[in-house]
Image 1: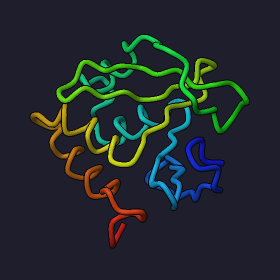
Image 2: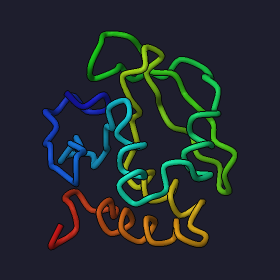
Image 3: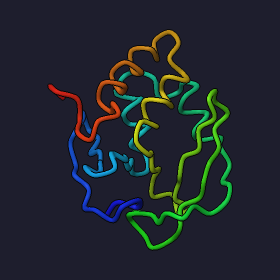
Image 4: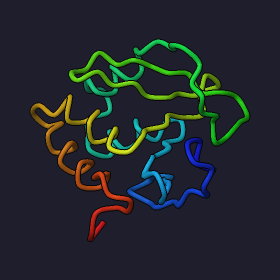
Length: 135
């Protein structure tokens, strides 16, 4: 269930990653390791984007609950411009991205080869309620 609006999430497959997305609020849940798998499939598993997400320390408790366990998510603040606050499960179950945050996260790190990933994820997770046409 979506941690924002409580709706059932839809899953779709990209490479070896099953991505959960809420059709109502367009939020995205990536289970533990899925961001790394997505970056690894593009050859960028050790890049600065992954390092920034992994290095972010837990902040205050979020009002949202983990879709995998009953615990509240914790806000993580990434050193990006503009500032980006994501919600991560302290038990390691995954990360919640509000509408547009996946694309924003990748855009912040879209230099060199990561620009290719930024364009792909920007198309995949555009601000609409459904995946971009043809995806």
